[in-house]
Image 1 (tube, rainbow, N blue to C red):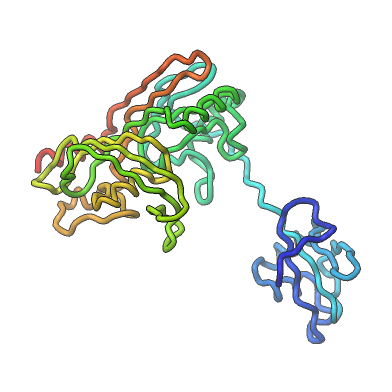
Image 2: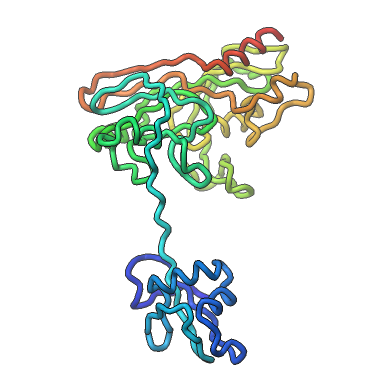
Length: 328
């Protein structure tokens, strides 16, 4: 089976050609034939594709819209698979910790556990759902239907500051600052082990892992340039853990998590890129999320160009983590 182009294609959606109908399949219903020979969708899904005009008889170019059409020996068919249209997020009355707001932007202190924008498995209770309820008429549309106003994001289980554009002008101007890496971003993190250097710089391109596509990794070829500066603030329990601050030059997916894991200092609570030492206390071993907080965010206001810096303290769970470590 091959993906090909055909005259009946009206967009860039993929098209698949079926095998030729055999003698045994003669007079079989079209929907049943497609579900048997292609197997990648259910019979009901093929019925919808047929009824929507996405199936064509190969030789005659006839578009067939009846699922009970009887196939004939020697025929083959072309099926167009339209691109999935993401569901438009619904406004939800979710409380927001708004640090700053004006006509152009908001600065939000996002709690750990909140997803920034809707995606697979997280269509509700996201920051976008909350924003659509808070200011539905003024959010930027540049980010697309799934994430209006979102200029950048932080991971679901990372807490802290991010800026949201309320109009297209603000979105474009803030995006320029992110593209030239002039945005100030400082994170607090608690990592496993003693970080020996008082400060350092981690460089290494980050891309999708070749062994696990759900993870990011340092890659020798491809990927995107990533630079993290870190400062060691404290070491606890004779080297059980360290408190560091990270300043980002770039903002790649999972950047701090990947970079610190590359130094063998994975974040406490980050079970994707590291694991707790067997000798660690249960409180540390069971910390429920990566110990990472975006505590400082600085940028030039998109309209006035005034430099603005916002700071927020570590949330309760990370402060309790710090208190526990200090008592070791």
